[in-house]
Amino acid sequence: MTALQGSSLPEGTVTVWDEAQAAVITTRAELRRLGPFMGRACTVTQAATALGLGVTATYKLVQRYVRLGLVWESHCEERAGRALRFYQAPPAFYVPFSVRPFEEMGRLNRAAQLHEFEQNLQRAMNTRAWTQWGTLTCATPAGDWYYEFVSQDGRIFQPQADDSPRILAGWNRVSLTSAEAQTLQQQLLALVRPYFNRPEQGETYQLGVFLSPERVQ
Image (cartoon, rainbow, N blue to C red):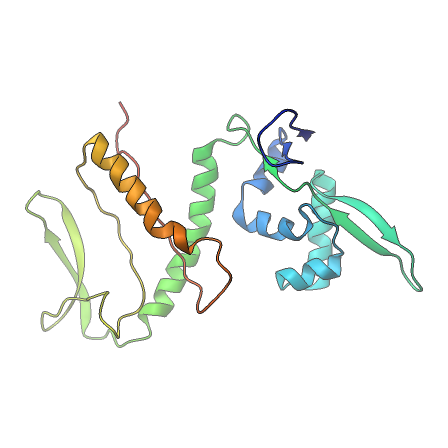
């Protein structure tokens, strides 16, 4: 890792050229575990508390990050019995796409998040009786096929209903001009951005927003 000189990126940002380091930095679950050490000195016990992990498990994580060169021992405080060791990582990382391609980073993170989403979805759907419900496969006027949750007596699942699980799931194919795609992209960002990086309040939800051209000329 090398410090970025003359950059407008946050002060202390280091660029990562090592693929093993990049694999950690660009994986959300790993980055979360590295978080307590980024830009600050932290003991293994303090990190374990912040992460909700056991001290032994956190110690093994720290040792792995030390071997990778992502974390170093910043200082040591002598005390009766055993010295208190503090570890630290850079406050920010920059990983060039030449080291970790965006599509690979996205694929691995989406796979992990999708697995978690499917488990959460199953739990959410099990909060109500679904014995008389099933999947109706339909065709749109444009000739695309889609799925609808429908009861045996013809009731359609309504996500906006008061007693409905708070979920949305599905992929949709839409026909857009380049200008419309840009507008939709901006609208989606404007819709979800106010909910990012807020102090925790109420329940935690998974939110995924995806938009990509199907064929790039």
